[in-house]
Image (cartoon, rainbow, N blue to C red; front, side):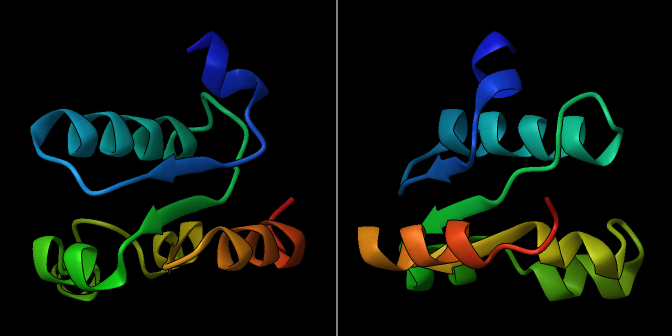
Length: 90
């Protein structure tokens, strides 16, 4: 939690249960206002699009459509830096 309180961004890489668990817990902390809203950067677009269908979750009402703005999928460190620089929810 102390790490997240000081973070400028949250990066998640390809992984299994632990990676998704930590990422989803951090997103929940953001949704509930327990931590500052920072960009979530999911490295590996194809992986994350196959593993989690975010749009389906929003359509089902399990997350709000605004929650889709909390993260970006990126492929490179350069894309990640640009996403952090241009992120509008500060």
